[in-house]
Image 1 (cartoon, rainbow over the protein chains, first blue to last red):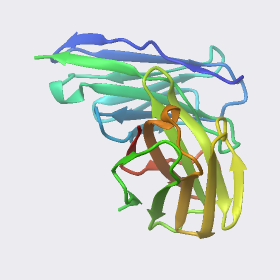
Image 2: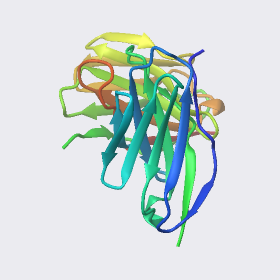
Image 3: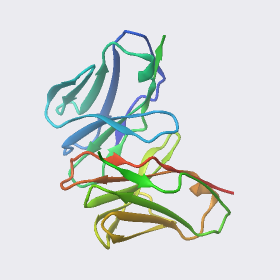
Image 4: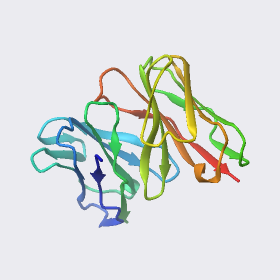
Length: 110
Length: 113
């Protein structure tokens, strides 16, 4: 059974701090990795995707991928209260069957 | 802009009723999906379709069926609704090869009483 694991949280960080969200996956054949943000009662929205080992930056967000260790992380710099949401990690092994983690709830304290 | 529309946002149905959830995408995407999302269980794939009239079972297809008669429309059918099908249902689509970004609809909240 292919799995994607995330700490459910909540992860609480003060406003302006760096929030670090982690995700591990079991399928070594996984090729594409996504981070989605989901506000309560809303559908997930894409924040970032990453395909290659290393870091990928987009504004305040940085995705990090380490295929050897089978983990992907998301860093949010200068965290804002509006970043408070559940963050879903999703992994694709090239089969269209994207596997989602159960999400990490982030709380940014003003 | 990408648009996936789920026409029914909030539904309350009785046990044993037949339920239709409709999803339409305007991006000419080939691949469409139905997920359900439950607290603590995350998103689970029910069915997906990679072309008109083509479908494949996901991880939890029992109690559900799907229909894709047109490329833009993918319907989820609960033949006889049960209380354990109370959930949020998410439709999604992607273009082309696996690994591309999934776009989600706004979700359909179904309560079966």
